[in-house]
Amino acid sequence: MSTQPTQTNSKSEVRGVFSSQEIRKVGTGTTTRKTVQKTFWFVEQHGDVIECQPLNTNYVPSGSKRKITMDELIAKFSPEPEFYMNAVFPKMQELQQNVDNGDAHRKNGESFAAEYEYSRALKLDTENVRANFGIGLTYLERGDTAKAENIFQRLVKLDAAFEPEHKHLFNDFGISLRKNKMLAQSLQYYRRALELTKNDENLYMNLARVLLETKDIGGCVENLLLALHLAPSHEPSLKFLAWLVQKQLVPGDKMDSVKAALQQTHVEAAPQTEPIG
Image (cartoon, rainbow, N blue to C red; front, side, top):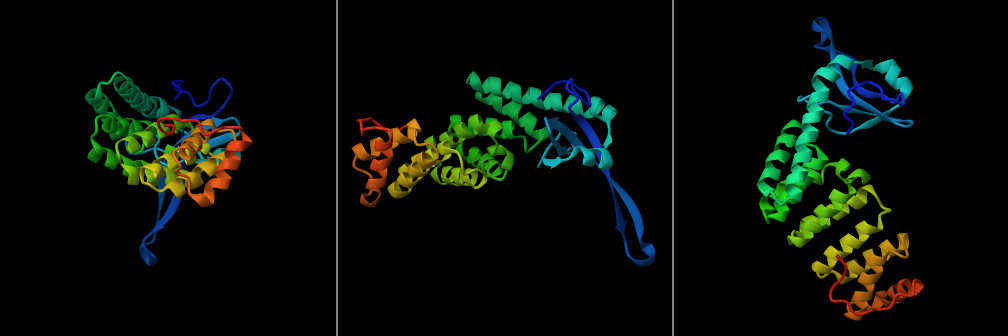
C-alpha cells in the first residue's frame, strides 16, 4: 500500500477518496420526501483500470471492489482530498502497520504478539485479507484448530483472498489446513479457489495432495492430470504421479493416461519417500 497521501501520484494516476450521492424517495403519498445518501469510496487507478471500494465505518477501504471508467469517475464522483488526508489515510496507515507488525511477529515465532496485532487490524477491517490469513496461519501454527475454523469460514467467503496478489499466503494457509488434518476444510478451500480460477496447476496439485490423504486415489490422479493438462512439465505433479505409480496406487482405468503424461516429459517412476508437499 502506498503511503503517499494524495489524490493523484507522479504518473497522474488517481488515488484517494471520492464521494457519490444518491437521491432516494422515502415514504408514500403525501408523506413522500427525498433524501440524499452520500457514500464515500477509495478510488485507485492502475494503468487504464480504475477501481473503487467503499469505506467502512472505521474509514478504511473494505469489501468488494468494482471497476469504473474515467468518464464515470468525473460524472458521478466528487473528490474528498481533506477527508482522505485527515481521516482515511491515517487509518489506512494504522491498518497497514498492524498487519506488518503481525507478519513480523509471526515470522519470529511470536505467536501471541502476532495474534494481538492481527486482531487490532481486524477491528479496523474484518475483511482485510492479509490480517485474516495471518491470524489464521498463527492459529494453525500453534494447533488451535477451533479458532482457525472460524477464520477459515470467513476466508472462503472472501473472493479477494484468492486473488494473485495473495497467492503466497493462500498457498501457505491451504497447506497448513492439510497438515493440521483439517481435510474437509482443505477440500472446501481448494474447490472454492477453483471456482474463481481454472488455470492454476498448483491448485489442482494441492487438491490432489488432500485427496490422497482422504484415500480418494481416483480423484487425486484426476486432479494431477488436470494440472498437467495446463502445464505438461509441472515438476511437482510429475513427481507426485511418479510416486503413485511406484507405490502401485494408480487405478487401472487411469494408468494409460498417467503413463502418457509421464512419457511426454520422460519422467520415470523413481522411488521417493513421499509425494511432493
